[in-house]
Length: 299
Length: 110
Image 1 (cartoon, rainbow over the protein chains, first blue to last red):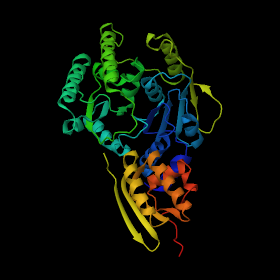
Image 2: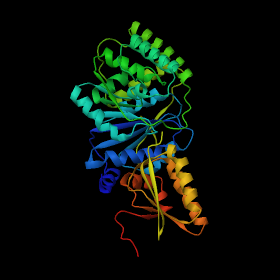
Image 3: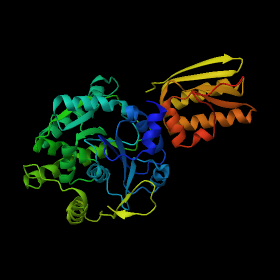
Image 4: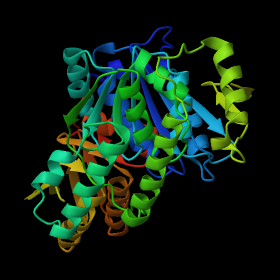
C-alpha cells in the first residue's frame, strides 16, 4: 500500500464502494485510532473503493469525538444515545452499509485485517453468503487448556449445534464477512442486541439458506478483556433458548424477507425497534453523523 | 503470546532498536525491559519501524515513554522509516508531530 493510496482514500468521497467495514464500538477511545489506521493502511491498497462505519453503542468516553475529528472522507460514525448492545450496533452498521461485501470486525484488531482477503476468497469460491473467521483450529491446537475446559467447550459447541442448526465451530469470532444481500437480510430480521447476536445470525443464515463458510484465521488475544467465560456461557445458553423459541413461534419466518431501502428502511427499522419486546426500554434516538458535519440528523 | 522480534545494536549514532512484527500490549513488557537496559548507557535511541506491521495504543505509549526518558537524559528518540501502517497510525493519533521521525522519503542529514 502506498501512502498516496491512503491519502486518496482519506480525501476522496466515494459514491460507490465494493466493501463496507463495520466496527461496533463501545468505549473504545484507547483502541479505535490504531485499529482505524491498520484498516485504512491495508484496505486502501490499490485504491480499493471501501468505506468504514464506526457503529457507536452509546460510548461514554471520547470514542465518537476522536473518530469524528479525523474527518476522513469515507468514514461514517453512527451514534446512539443509549447503550443497546453489540448486536444492535452491528445491525445499524450493516443496514447502513453500501458495499457489495460487508465485513464486521472488532475494535481491538484481534483478527488482523490482512485476513480479510482470505475470507473474501472463501466467500467467492464457495458461493456462500457468510464467511466467518474461526479460532476453532487454535482451540484444537492449544496444549494449555485443561481437560475440563476442553470438555466444557465441546459440550457448549454440541449444544449450539443442536439448538440452532449450525455446524460452525466458532460462532463468536468478531470477524465476519457477508454478501450485501446476506448481511442486510440477516440483520434486518435479527432481534438480539447483545453478545449472542452471532448465534442468531448463523441460525438465520441456515434458515434462509445462505451458505456459511468457516475460515481459520490468525487471532491475537486482546489483553484487558473483561469477559467472564462462565457468565458469557450462561448468557449464551439463555439466548440459545430464546432463538429456539423465536423460531418455534414463527418470528423469523421461513422465506427470505424483502429488506426495504433508503428512508423507508430507517423509518421502518426505528418503528420495529420501538415495538420489539427485545428492545423495550433500550431504544435510543439513533444519530448519523456524516464526515465533516457538526449537525446531527436522525437516520 | 509474544509475536514480535526485537533486536538491539549499538552504533556511533546511538543505540538502534529494531522491532519486527506486531507491536501490541503483549510486547510492551519485553520492550520496556530492553529499553531500560539500553538507557543505562545512552540517551540517544533510534527505533527502526519499517518492519512493524501494526502498533496499538500500548505500543505507542511505550514509544512515548521511551521518548520522555531519552529527553530527560539529554538525548532523544528518533523513529526511523516507519512502515506505512505505522505512519498512518502515527498521523491518526497525531503522534507524528510529537516525535523526531525520519520518514522513508526523507534525505538524511549528515
